[in-house]
Length: 637
Picture 1: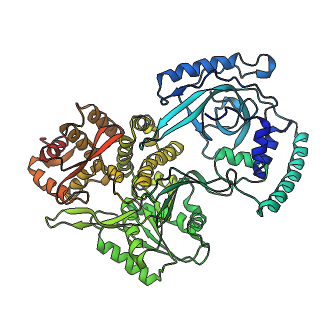
Picture 2 (picture 1 turned 135 degrees about the horizontal axis):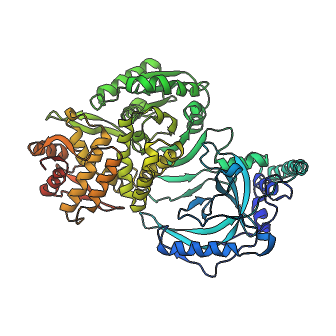
Picture 3 (picture 1 turned 90 degrees about the horizontal axis):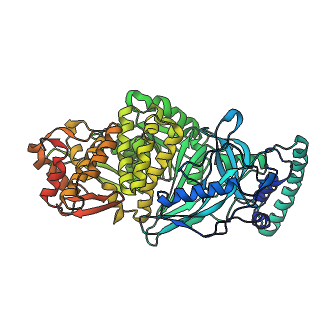
């Protein structure tokens, strides 16, 4: 476990490697600086390091209660001065800058709760920036110190077996004092002089005017040899003004940039994908595209747009995207019909005709605006045009954001000889350079389409494990209410499950097949187009069928998981049975399963849950197992 708290000397020494960070620390710690703490409190060291297996470890609650009681009696005298009347911490833990921090929220103006952002470890305390709780675009309100101690480590285990440990700090805020306005003026002057000196020194040593906060280069983490995919942590640049720098840290984004709440980047063998989840992103699309493709002028863009129900996407969100692309170059638009029947080669060829007429070349950018079908069709068109042009996806549905736009799969359907529809039998791996998930567009998404996307989220939670499904169950009411902050976090976490699997297996040679949980049954149902099922609705039914098939295959005992999945899907407003399908249809449905792209030499291949967080691929499970799954969801089964 790393040292619990760094002393001021070491903090300043490290910070001096980056002049902007040094400016920030000096501004925060200077006496008299407005809205900073005038005194620090000694840290109470834990007698030994405790390791808790997870946040759900039963011993953790007792450890937090003990540490909370210690902080009430710590320090003695006026130095400690803990804020009175604070109740013990709730069980929830928040991750801030690599620490799991447990603290009761500070009360702000008129008793408004504040949230905490850890900025730096100080002398005997944790320094945090407190912002108004629930604010869509947080801004700095105050800086507080927490009196407390490290009580141990939280241990988390990834699906690939790697273990990560997080230091856990438990504390309470100490009193806040505001400095005099006059003091702030001389501090600002001193900081400005110091900034110039440090920047000149840095330029002289390294030949650079400024560098990002943190390490010199973006660091690669969770890299797998041979996977072709790496996750990149992107450093944040800070403004030179210390107050603005604190606001940037508290808000999590640069003031001149779109409000990006979550950012992920994947490195593929043939390129990289940056995934952004936030609000107000489409109007800034030009800046984001420029950063992704490395060109800012004379870029011809081709936008394939799904007009949406009653043209809502074309009339509401397309203008925002086009306004954001102004100044980048000429923009051409073409409509994409979002239906499983139109998701076909003729639909792709129609886009290719428009690209030819519009002069789209290898320096152009193809942009998809719409749901999962639009992302698949436009993506496949981009992969084949002139052997591949840059692709940007702007999903306008929940399903598109958590699934279809991520991972590089593109494709279309093909008619089967039996008359049914073969799902995604024709396609290519062609990752988008940029995926823009603007949560604001979900406000206009119909209830049925929104709920349909939740099926993929439930699937991801089952793959991820019990904690993920419990979080989904607790957040589902706020998600259904489309709370913007909960929704962005929810989308990022669900998409992160898929991203984590794609990291290990970008071309579906192994673990990526796990993402097909419930899909073999779902695609068979979708081949019966007369049922009128949306993809997410078919996936929901497929998840129930997969649970029942797992029991028949001896992977589970009893109906505990099936009952829980049915309950979650029911709360989400999704179907758990296929009305209009009976036992007389089983032969046709199983024939469709044998030509599914996951099948091997005509043998059905199922992805089944052994437990939450433990999903396996079963080759040729046998007709009785497959039929048992259908028995859970069809009439008379």
